[in-house]
Length: 462
Image 1 (cartoon, rainbow, N blue to C red):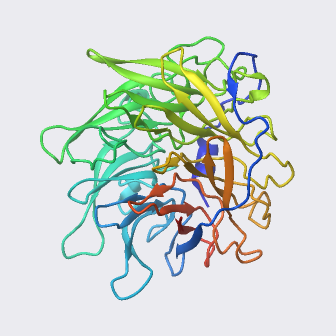
Image 2 (cartoon, helix red, strand yellow; image 1 turned 180 degrees about the vertical axis):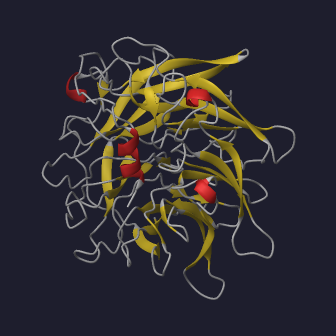
């Protein structure tokens, strides 16, 4: 089974991950703040994958929602050709619950030229089309695609917008793992279908350490062109000071001025020879783009400020950035939640919470993988991919948690694998960023578990 986690391990081959720290000044706001118990939230699985032959399973993607409240996502496995699917969940008209629809099975074409193992967030445009990426490990170097409803047919029509590594030495990028974004996404504006889309590839570029790219229609809606905005590891020293390996789930965010923000898993000036990763900003600069590193992870001894961010960033209306790292923090290296006020090299970085306070089973969670979402009161919600105290998951490390952070205090809302002893009927290993509906309901995914052990989609009502 090739999950996103295992896909990432393949892509990381040959990259060193040393953990060394240098002492610099940073605010660690949560050093002695305890986490608290579950609040009054209602958790429910709304779909379990792999309930039939040629099933879809192994879901690690973020969910997206259209104007009618339908949910969309991808699975990295299953489908007719066993190379992943795109799916839709719709509220049933004939009663409670959600109806599942298979929209597309990847690798329908010879040599998987239509992509394989889709991952990341699906952008929904005003016409209902979907835009995403598939890294296609073992079947090429990845694609960016558009899916459109096919009148009279249950399956949708896929159009390849760009095939990566189509230029010599993959200078256009290699292995897109995260989803796409666009101007206005941060404020919740729908995508118009013609404005540029932005994303990252985990590898490729002139240094083979990933790129930031732009996709734009050229010569009509059916023709698109790709342009590399930035090549990582362009500033070399003992490490790639400008960062390397963006992602693997680093969905970019764009501010109202058109600047892009994201994270790299490695590189930067902290964390020894491989670097602990970076938070970066890209600014349009005449004909090109310039990069500024806003923060270097693992700049504090023992990486108490966090290291190796895998997910994307959240930007609030004031321009403050929030995110998480999967490692570091000083408590078993279980990761942190942070905020950053962007101001170039003088950006203010603060750790809000450090996971695994109790040691042992990491009852408060371990290894936050996805990004964060915020409610109207400024509370942050997210997931950890392990921990939680229920260790009958596949790896025996806990199925993960759902959490809420108010200020620097954490409330554990749900521990995965807590329903159905040994079976994880409520799912396990949530990786994607939560989706917040207009009524405050949160939706998310678990990579595995559920009634058929193929993963779940869940909802959380306050």
